[in-house]
Image (cartoon, rainbow, N blue to C red):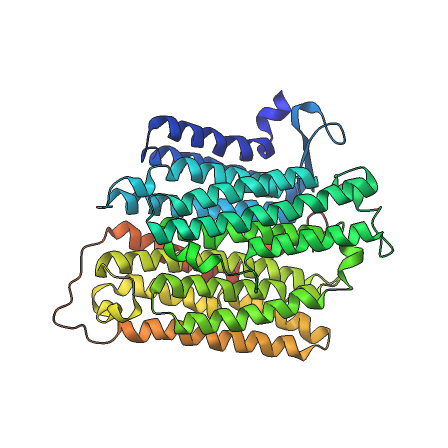
Length: 484
């Protein structure tokens, strides 16, 4: 019992479940303060875990005192700790933003009636996924993430929003089914779903069932990550949801499935991955180009940012052909995930302010915004700076590490893709900024916006830039357990 009380691992799952349940009991639309208090506690727990890992190394908690293989182990290494810390760091300011955003909502309570309990369940499932050490528990966490995310997209929506949510649900269920089938094939071959037990058993001479399992699980997770050509569900879902939900989905949810791909690729499927490492890299290139082109063409602000997510997720998959013992590509991928999450949360938060002020969701409606909302526009520009990969942002550090890894492998093609992606990102970011500096029509009206919304967008944007100056600490934590 004492170990349970003072171990942050189980509490990182139980705490969000607890406050999610309480906010549900409080009734529709209530519980924002409780959620913020709970998220503050989760951030403290994640910090304690990270500090403990730096001092003591990988930590294991046997749930109920029954460890694997009879029970369930929660395991935290450096990679898990980085993702846990990142999740709470992004979720806390977004919760403050959501409380202010919904508190000023004039469209009724339906949109955010169950935002707080669904968000709590979503974060509990994400934390559980980062700490799970067997394939079936990972499936359960992955399924709960998908269901909570679909519920958030659908909340209070009209026809187009419900259609987007149903498409998201269909893709999520099909992907989860494929993943579970892969787990079943691995269990039939080796009689275990423990990642630690499977790691020494799988080799490059594995039976066909194992290769099929790896393919099914890989495709399923790529679909959940919205990697091209499985991206078709993401822009409608992110573009039609309420702004706080769009920020959560883009900044956090798609990173969970990427984390799982990375965990399996570096773990049990490592002997198989080198054979097909070029495939996720090529799909990443297609995602960067296609997502960027669609963002450039988009007229709606939210769709522009949503298509940007499709493009930026492509960078995460460029690392797979470059993974090597030096750890540079892994560091690049993790840094890209963190910087993109902060920048995209800031972008959606800034777009929420712009939409609230103009009462419109188009790029054309931004004329005159530079004079009325300079603080928010500056936040959007800082986030765009990270997306483009300009120094000293976290995006610059991620792309620099990726280029360095490509050069060490003598693969100049990936270098050109990174540079091209940055230039394409500049086009759609500066398209927004240019429109904002045009003179506003005499008929245009601007509505007041809570100042706290602007500050949160600015804070997230600044964090995405400053992340590039604190990479050493992140890499030190990432190295715990041999991740990098």
